[in-house]
Image 1 (cartoon, helix red, strand yellow):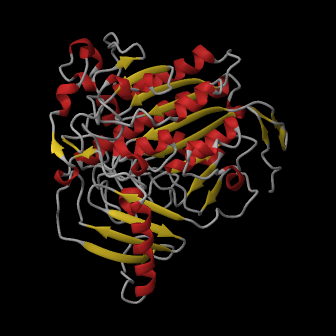
Image 2: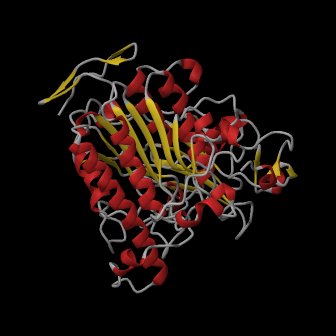
Length: 472
């Protein structure tokens, strides 16, 4: 089915008739990001592990489109999130790795540079009520925290991980970067809920607080699940006694809890008759850590690698009456495309001065175009790289996880990824010109980026005591 063009003037989305639906206002926007969720950890995916159900994640797929070649922006948490919230390749501003003890300039703060605007800035300036719930992980000093980066409301933490049972001890938790804070920079009072449920409850409360506002809403719900620590409630574990492996059972229980909160959020939107004018994305910040903790089936590689298992993730988009329903799309899309799409829906054509790197997915997801235009996609971690264009993917890897640790030596390989998504056959000798052209294009792109500012790789600079700078 072909839909009318999306045309915007100023800050108002003009009427768009789609069947019986009529969108006359800028949409509410919700981005739900899981953490370390593998491609095979969702039951809508027929190629997945298939050992449990995710009915509410599947509900988004049924009401929208699922991208079979949806990619994370990076292979580890912090850089992937930095790319999404700025809408740019995070390498443009030197964000190659998670914040760590190595800094290029010990006097410079570590996080998304303060001269970079975020989607929170753009949308709040455009009249949206903006909120961030969950994991931030993009700068220890509070000047880098979401409430200083365009998000008016905040309920979450600013670290790579936190205890899922932090609630009862939040006021006295001895790891301040893993405690739960509000937008005033103060720790919240102790709370009884399992952390995933607390984030879900806060998301429903955000909708409830602002449902009658004359301003559209933007919520970035960044769950920690199923990232470690591997902690699940006894009630959720009991539901999966049929899974013998303890690690797998715990991970599944953690995803189950997250899926339940997504259901609560969808139910709230439906109850308030907001679902028809809400653009929703669901994805993961990177691939899973590997079985049994998570499943990247059917792909090779894990979190931290630039093989498909580290990068290809669940990727869903829905907007009732605008986006097609129950449709699978095969063009490659990445995390920065989510940023470009939601800004186009909310604001219209983004200002060229923002230098966004993603593309607007709405014409593709609404059926106006059959495919996205072919383009190069780039990934670079502290030690591994990859580039994709059409049917080809070139990988330069040291078979590492992350933090600069080398395992297995360097491998450069060319894959016809359209036919070999499991990356089983290196075709670089059979197609040396393709491999060389891909390598040269990657080096050209790499030359335009800022050198790494910080991370875990000793090559980045000087060792510093970064945790000592944290302000509680």
